[in-house]
Image 1 (tube, rainbow, N blue to C red):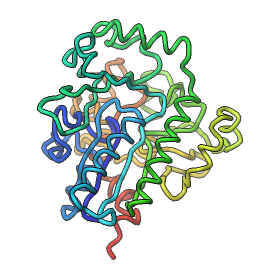
Image 2 (spheres, rainbow, N blue to C red; image 1 turned 180 degrees about the vertical axis):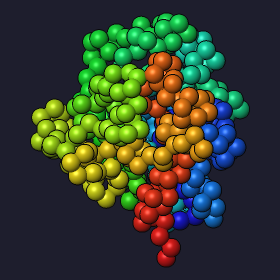
Image 3 (cartoon, rainbow, N blue to C red; image 1 turned 90 degrees about the vertical axis):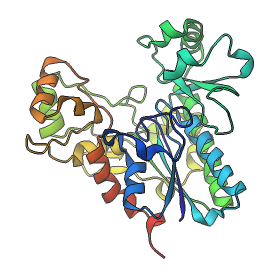
Image 4 (cartoon, one colour; image 1 turned 90 degrees about the horizontal axis):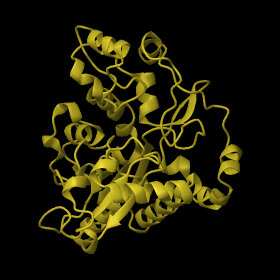
Length: 344
């Protein structure tokens, strides 16, 4: 491997690719926002990393942006045998709408930057050829999109109330995943995927990690002492097929063991992602060595102040983005042990 393309949501990049930065400029990010692409580039400098991640990206946008970059490298004459792909899948519920040039007057780019992706590089400025408007979760009722683009907000709410269903979004993701696998296989490209968090459990409402612990002391104990996760060990393939019967053939087309890494711990959790791994394998944070569990906790500056904020309800208590130090540990202990990094 000489070239590595990474794709994902805000667990892959804090900035939007080819809006805030190019796919090769991510190492300029503040150390607080160093995730696995940054640590791979730092720890394996002989590999050229292209970070196609963008916050809020759904799985279809992730697949599209990665395929776009693969085609670019192949068109430059780089053989597939020198290219590898790592994808951090988001949750499959996210939906994006393409805003073409003739819709820009009704939906201008600038007010929607917090909901926009535009990964192509052949442009003079973002949205020159259109952009994707990302509706990050099905429940948009608390979203600022209502204020910045009320027409799009009402349209999306109507979609959610009339035709939205989990299985359609699940099917579309599986279709794109299968297409990506075939594309990589046909070009001799290595592919490995992991997940933001468990993609299959019915306990994850709209893809959000469930959390039924009361704010305050119970949350602190659950996060930092018990390192609590939902137990999904009794969930089976039959359970998934019963939920999504139309998806069965799509699901069975994918060799999950070959192409995916899951966090599994007997009696604790199975089919987890980096979020579950981080909670269970977090670096202990002390007052002398403040290593926040989540990137959002950096602002407090110490473990004591973080826990005070949790007690006072000053921060989201359930989950956040894996912090830089914990992502470094994940990269060293998990990612760099995948076959694509073996020296021949």
